Amino acid sequence: MSDRVLITKSDGEQEVFDVAKLEHSLARAGASSIVRARITKRIVEDLKPGMTTSEIYRHAFDVLRHEDAHPVAARYSIKRAVFDLGPSGFPFEQFLAEVMRGHGWSVRTDQMVLGRCVEHEVDVVAEKDGRRVGIEAKFHNVPGGKTDIKDALYVYARYEDLARSPHAKTRIDEGWLVTNTSFTSHAIRYAQCANLVLIAWDYPREKNLFSMIEDVHMHPITCLTTLSEHEKRVLLDHNIVLCKSVCSAHVLREYGIKPDSIPLIIQEATTLSGV
Image 1 (cartoon, rainbow, N blue to C red):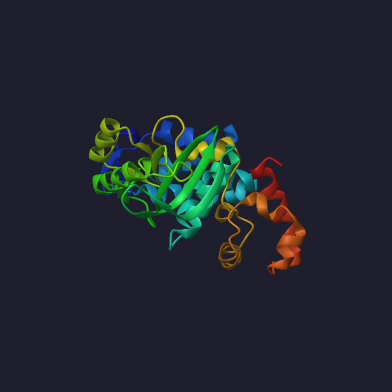
Image 2 (image 1 turned 90 degrees about the horizontal axis):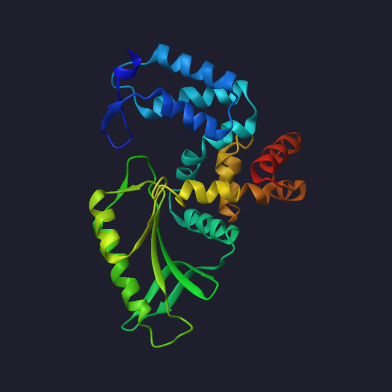
């Protein structure tokens, strides 16, 4: 039976294939009930022991891309699209800053901030309602990479120093560690004890990275199915990381996007961005 088949997750661990989990991810992306049924039927028929979650994703994405609206396929591919922001990690920092702006924060990136003892390079400094947060962005290029307790210890020590800065204008009230994958159980246990904020793709259950993106429609351009990989890279190289930023024909023409493709790109980007 398909519900007893072990599949391989991105971190190498195995789990029993769960049809309900697949259907939930498709529904969350906005796939119609007909398409959800077609995809689950195809995957259940093709399922083999040891099949990877990446293979299951590719099957589902292919059907969405060819049989449902472009924005649904794009929404389903958000997690993969965030990986595609790499490899340097800098676009991820820029993307995270835009997500924070979408939630009403005033944001600066790549800042040198004076602590009590030394200066620290902070990926993102966000301010809102008199509260100043320093964010360490931990980017992983591939699924399965986990952020561990060493990173949590490092970030906690940095923000303890920044919280004691002699200058009120640079003092950091709270430190966050944000990753596009997941945390080890040791990192989570330490952070809960030390009162360090951790945000991963699906951690915590609420206000995780996925929900932060979806709640304000801050989707990365790498999830657009109407852009080629080369076109995405050109835009990223010019610090254009959001679908919201390519809803204009002028912007697309400026960076050499083929004129014939522009209407479809704008339509997909506009739908995703909710503009």
